[in-house]
Image (cartoon, rainbow, N blue to C red; front, side, top):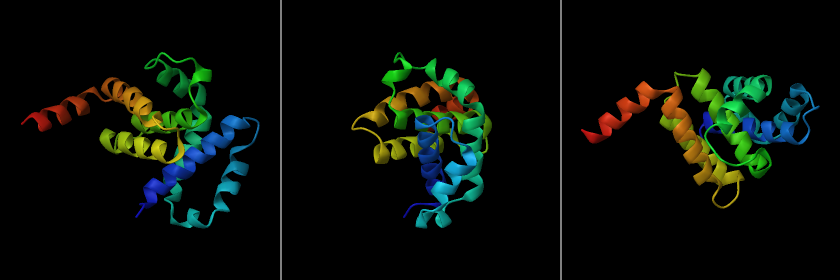
Length: 148
């Protein structure tokens, strides 16, 4: 069973992907397309809108932030991986109420669903580094709990 929050993240990634392929398309039209899916009613609408509109508003800054943690050129990152990374970067940087392991796990699972064979490994590696910088105290606390 997918949670409402997982569905919201999946729809947000689909919207970010659609926007990457057609950046002139307004977010409201992307949202309208996604709402036509029968399963949209099962998604957490507030989380969906927060992620979609937040990523589209801050895409350049989020892309720059994420690109510090990998060696690939922008055209070597698949659109699915990029959409997932932008979604997770937004949550890691702007939503401290969501634990970072939840954000990373959701990103990995969504990449497994929509991305290429090993895309989830790339996403995991990038997000582990990003989380270590953005949420150093939380990461250290989590590691200490695992070791005790």
